[in-house]
Image (tube, rainbow, N blue to C red; front, side, top):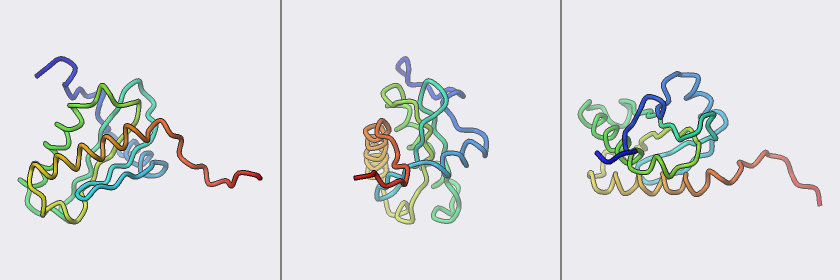
Length: 129
């Protein structure tokens, strides 16, 4: 493992309130197999949370594979990401993907999050003319 590519505890979303905060005020980036919700984080670096349930992946080994792939994709680009909290969730198509296509989709979603994280989320107010 190269230096800086670890997945320390400080780079993880652990508490339900942390997940809730991202889901409530975050922006969504959709891929074919994954949805990434992101919001500016309180700390100096990016943090990752995974919401992988039994709905689309009933077998435990499939859920574990998806989580492993997501952690690895995040670990590879963690130092290049801005200070955002990210929650990744699979879509209903995730069971149709192989490892290569799942990883490619994760990379695309994380790259879009990195590109869009510096753009502030819309506030819902109309600008005055």
